[in-house]
Image 1: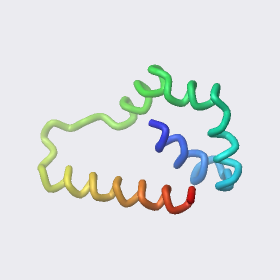
Image 2 (image 1 turned 180 degrees about the vertical axis):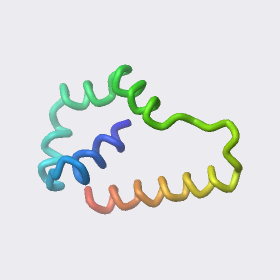
Image 3 (image 1 turned 45 degrees about the horizontal axis):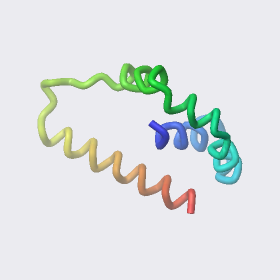
Length: 76
């Protein structure tokens, strides 16, 4: 969930890397971003399809891994 929030700050809210780091140093912000309510909202946005083929799941995981890797590069 926190990774999604970092991505949201950088790509959708226009934060700079330094601004996102500053925002993430705020404990209240992190607590709110990782709250049960925020997690449920994020899960509702990405419903799972039980009929999804293994190939599509593998592609989605590969894409997600690539995005996480890009975020880590940005944060370093």
